Figure 1 (spheres, one colour):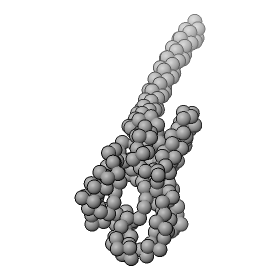
Figure 2 (spheres, helix red, strand yellow):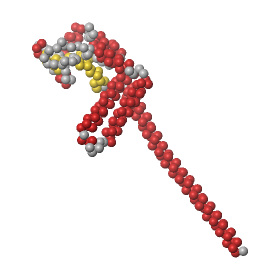
Figure 3 (tube, helix red, strand yellow):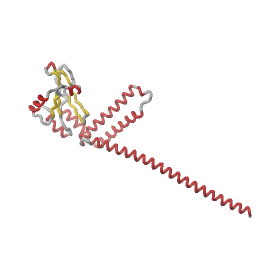
Figure 4 (cartoon, helix red, strand yellow):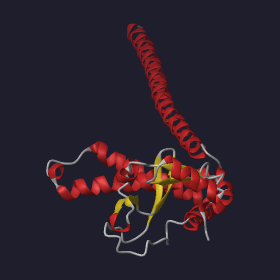
Length: 254
């Protein structure tokens, strides 16, 4: 049987920090369950009142089986408090009219998901291109939002929906690729990429600003040189005219 605790070492090897099992049960049941099955690596968390499970939208009723409220099967990958991926069994219901499915919430499905994402990160060139494309897309969405819609578009539902969905899609894609990178190259790698990108963008902007300052300075110096040349030429012309006038009047006097 494909138990989570059997898969734990493989998940750990792929960068998963901890594996938790949440059940709508009390702490005593969870403790004895773990003890009977010899679970040591997976952390068993009791959700006695089902409050967490209810907020996850997974609380179902099993009254006809005498179980009361229970949790529908699901698994999720969480990174820094954010749900990256969630696998939920189909057919959630409160009538217990099901076969208690266990098809996609198993450990192997999650393991395969993480491995497939890591495999996509092996080609650094492809990875860099994907990151660049996503970040440019996010920047473009932010630019559009910063410009603000026109008078007509301001209240247009389709425009608002498109703008909102584009922003959410960009955020989701960035979150997915961030998780893949951290799993593949270590936690904090994505933050380092963003910080380095921000540093280089700031440097580029500063260089552009300095280039504009240098150009204005060079243009000012060039104009000063032109004025100096014009002044010198003016003085020379005046001097030539004075000399020419003197010669003319001298000749006239003789």
